[in-house]
Length: 278
Image (cartoon, rainbow, N blue to C red; front, side, top):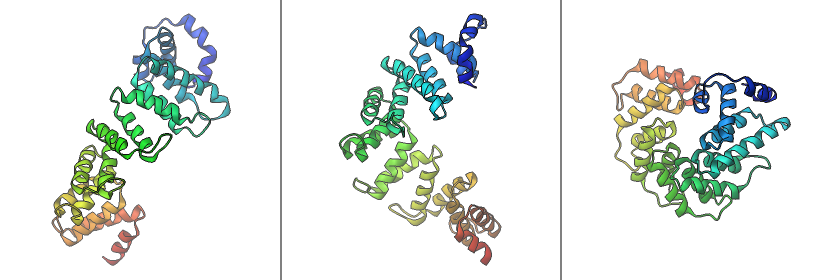
């Protein structure tokens, strides 16, 4: 898709567009050139969803270079049109733009405004991001209790990042009272949704009996999940140790060396040393 080139011929395309289509369908089918035409027509008629999708199209066409600033401003324009009508995805998009931009667009107060609008509609990502602002006092007075409340609301709706964050906060006693049982609870929620950070922390807690009854079988279960995804070399190493010693799993030297090799290939030095010594 080259929106910049397409913009030059838009008047012609509008004149001769004879196909049937609509904004959402063309966007979801990744027919972005047709989507731009359809979404523009629907957005100008006041469709909040089309306005949001049009904002996405313009935003995705930007590359951050000087000549794309006009497209970036068009994205903000259409996101704002949509957000002002209460379209929650657009409110969240504006929150992100104003919160995380590294240029003159960054505006903590506007980010706060749009996140709060989306939070009023119980939007989990916005609850999570607003919680971050309160946790660190970013653009707002630090308020750990508000942050915790927002993280919990987001996590209860299944938002993985919030579940993992709560697991971490309760596990480490980070800004709140340490509670290993709550840490396990939230790590498990995120781990069940394949969050690898939570899977690893959960495996460690069961492996070492950290705040929970030691359970090598459960540790092996989560290490295996991670090893299959090849995302955490230390998990492969620890699983290798378990197979090498028959600890929590049936001893299997071949499997142990397999996991040591995988971990070593990812640069985990302890695994490389085990391979040399086995």
